[in-house]
Length: 64
Image 1: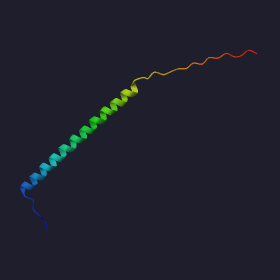
Image 2: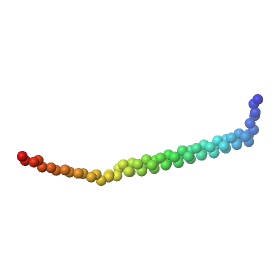
Image 3: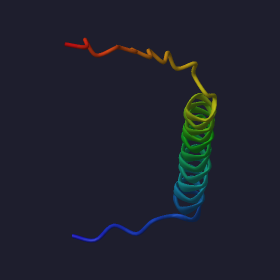
């Protein structure tokens, strides 16, 4: 049994598809932007040098 779609039903489906496509692209764009910011923060954290403690031990031989 096949049902014929009316013009208004096709318009509703096309509008729904358009809204779904816009929402999907908006969410993907937001996720990409958040990921870019976190990646930049991680790179900045790696680029900042941290002070390194150097311990120098000197000794003398016993003369015997």
